[in-house]
Image (cartoon, rainbow, N blue to C red; front, top):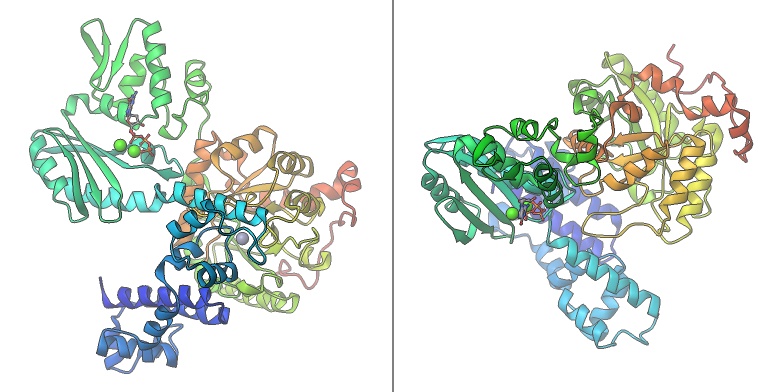
Length: 598
Ligand code: DGT
Ligand code: CA
Ligand code: CA
Ligand code: ZN
């Protein structure tokens, strides 16, 4: 690990500790910002420190410069050591469980000595939480659910983690003598939202050499099994990876088999039997004769089917659709024309607006929004209307310096506990795009609040509609069915949030929403450099939901996007107008708004 990375890790830890101790939130975000910019810094800290240039790193002030100095000199940071003494590590793990706030946790630690996941579970089972001050039956039930959800999720890998593991293994295996083809299989190839274990398939002339390299990869902590053509390993972090090596002329059949899903394969085999054929990992057979197996396309073709994209292989109707020739033409990353959910350093992001614009342009987009938080999201540096107007000045400036891409002025406006929006209509009216989200009061009538927000003609989209965080929390107490129905009725888009630990809407929910005619938006919710690339995850969710470019708002060019905006349609449609209690906004050119570009 480089020293920059080491220090960044320590700063992240300090941020966690400070957060846990309930200290000034600015302190923890300062640590996190510094950590990120150290990781991104081109030069190593040692050089920077020697030349007295540490403070050139964004986010590194006097205090953190001292920390870095201590680390370089002593290999430790005194203030961090002090912080560590105040918080047992098990409590930091518990802190990530939904349903337990820091105050409760600290109290349970002090009264019951709870310091780990296991302590907490045992205390609940033994009924020790009952009757403690401020802890009702409902709260205990929430903690129990949070623990279950956390433990279930912790066993599976996130997509980025799985891709990283697979990518590094494949890079190491590809140069091994005799290797011909190598691919990921299993749930990772299907882009399932979490991954049980990583499956890799390889064709090679000398399987032993590949297996030998695999079991000696740097990440390997345990070899769980090893044979002449397959092996399974476990990493130090407890992650598992399987490798299969097959002859090149059955690579297609093996890839089809090991991609799964199991349910898809079972259905496919039944269908094949009906046609007098047999399918297995070695090929497609008519009697003794092998009629396909080298390439996956041939396997499907031998069964009379078009190739089915892996994302659809879950037995949710894709085989029937393939038989009837009505597989959807799934959306691709190249068809996405812009990003409709991006934060800049004006709120809790770290990218200046200009950097967002340049990156979006590099990605080939025609447009990108700047959708910073609104004032109620104070923890995230939400903007007041005054700051928002100042931001428009900056947007106008960047529009002049970065050409060839449209920068749309937007906001991610909070849906308040009573269902009102955090900005008045006369502010929202001037924006090019309005995202509305619930960021607080997860148990307060979320369904109704979202419905109210969607009544507002300025609200173009609801972000992360269920609020789930994969492996960490279940999400809001929201009933999605009426939310979807209301989105369809008001023409409000629902987001597939592309952040890999959100993926919200999920594939199944996106499919439901689309069936009811809801426009879908892919939003990265970018906060940092590199996050705009999360678009790929959202595209994969959309593909798993069977969506085409026509279903997705940001697969349109910017002109169509503007014309299609909800408030314009609402203004023209009397029926919908009646549904907007605060009155639909007539189309009106704004003098102050960011859209006036003269
Ligand atoms: P995961 O690892 O839980 O995220 O899910 P998968 O789908 O990667 O499952 P895994 O790793 O157990 O197996 C990889 C693929 O191998 C699976 O998708 C289909 C195939 N496969 C494994 N076991 C069986 C089986 O007993 N029957 C059939 N038809 N296919 C199997
Ligand atoms: Ca797997
Ligand atoms: Ca496996
Ligand atoms: Zn958000």
